[in-house]
Image (cartoon, rainbow, N blue to C red; front, side):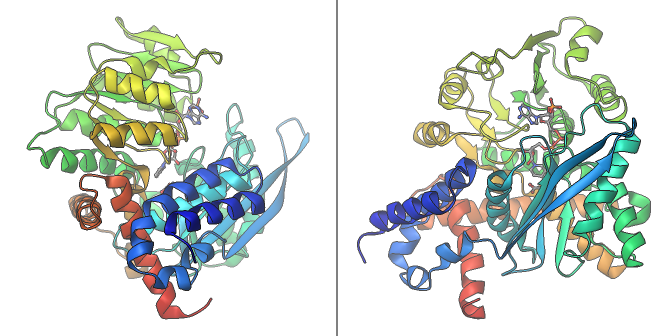
Length: 456
Ligand code: NDP
Ligand code: 2IT
């Protein structure tokens, strides 16, 4: 019994006690639990059926040893994971992250976000996430291949096109998906759509590499339309310089906006003249072929400055650059309370999150209070997994749709996600609050499926 907010506090105390040290997971659950208080009050059935309690307990967690040999013959042991969070509305679906910070708590946060995100896409996908504490930086192609083969040698027994369909995330792109797919096919003797983000000649979908970045820009466009505004001539900040950042820049240029920043974990570049097509082509070659650092952009193009990160500073100077829009596209909690205040002070009134949970809770609170157009990751970056869903559909049909068709479907999906967020926020008395809209709309879809399917 008790009021809903005591319910949420009690739930959070239990989550913290039962999942010690999993700070990002606590953060993600608290945000959702707080958002859905309004819903739980209106519809007591969700509390009675313990829907949220069930949703935050993964259906299954796999943890495994990944041994591999480097080019000098030295043996390494990494830890591999797959968190199968929810299969209520479809097979587990979500990316793999290879990064030294990967641990169980990080992947549980990402898997939990994925469940609600996937529900918003309108496609039948459950949620999962996986990866390893492997650092691809500085590794040769041969080392990455041996790692991927060892990782898949274990993972293959747990996944399948109707069971669990992994994809890329930080540190996992086209190269890694290729090696993972090759090993899966070799062991299973089956050519199936068990991974998404595949190469175009072997079951991949057009627009999948572009989809997350394009989608985040389409989402910003939809938010701006509600104010009869557009991206034309807007100054934009983009962080990161990987897959999501690159295609965010490409689509922003397409829409007539000017992008003045990019970054990586060592610092950020400021290009007051704005990135153009020629510069973006150079960046893509730098990052995707030569696997270089973004600081090299400042050495190559005149008028560009590189600012290294100061780990002792209380704010990231990238977010102090005056602008209209921000597209955080690097990693979780890259915008703290001070950064959010700096963004608002610098004139930013559109934030569309390409990354997962890039803004700290205190930062989110400021964006919501300020009433800016703030699109949280699980809505704004859902274009990537949405086109993964379209890749699964094409694989099942043994067909490949043309670029225009996939892009048109992606646009439609981003529009629909935007509409669900808007309408739900309105319905629950918090108009314009995309955080509440995304969390409630995503939760209801999964929760209703769980009610239909009984206590599982
Ligand atoms: P990439 O590996 O292609 O690029 C990651 C970028 O972020 C790099 O520039 C990297 O810099 C930077 N970065 C990573 N970790 C940190 C860190 N701890 N501090 C500072 N910078 C960091 O990954 P993606 O572009 O695919 O992913 C970026 C974000 O988007 C992630 O949050 C991911 O979860 C999210 N996302 C990705 C989707 C996809 O389809 N790929 C879909 C939806 C969300 P460095 O090289 O120095 O590490
Ligand atoms: O966070 C994400 O949505 C992704 N990394 C993409 C997942 C997918 O299955 O395409």
